Amino acid sequence: MLGHSAPVTWVGGCLFERSDALVSLSSDAHLNVWDPADGRCLSSAAAPLLSHGASVGTILPALTHAVIGGEGNALAVVQLSTMSRRLVLGPLDGWCLALAATSDGERGRERRARLVCFDATGQLSSWMLS
Image 1 (tube, rainbow, N blue to C red):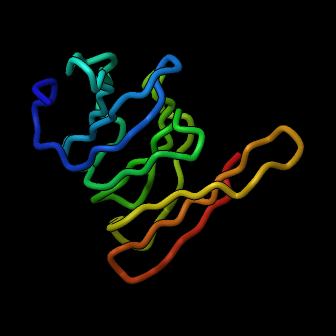
Image 2 (spheres, one colour; image 1 turned 135 degrees about the vertical axis):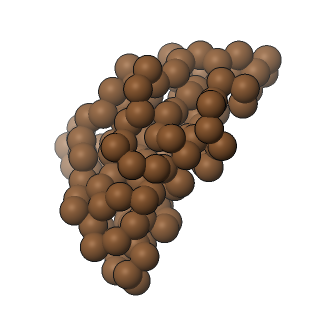
Image 3 (cartoon, rainbow, N blue to C red; image 1 turned 180 degrees about the horizontal axis):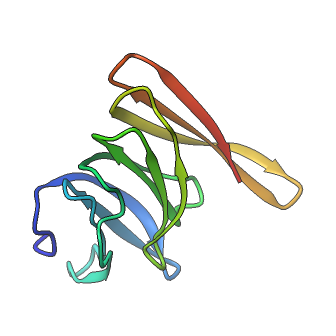
């Protein structure tokens, strides 16, 4: 994980260009995508994806988007192929301590995911994402 300039706080599995890959998040809110076979950095966020420190992440069920959060009161949904923020969720009552995403089935051709965040105040927030 030599492509980060701050400590890595989260690592997950994803799909990148139709191949298995790893995604890593650093405390300065940068994401990188890695080839697990040879360790090459395949993609890197040019700028921080949050305006605050980042410590948690999860991959949405389609494996093409990450959700990241941490020390602020918002979460960012990031499309990994472009490293662009697609959506900001919030405000949260406190820092996000844990994130999880599960498939919530399909409605027609639309894939849906349930995103759950546990924050520092003990609040559990949930979103349905398409």
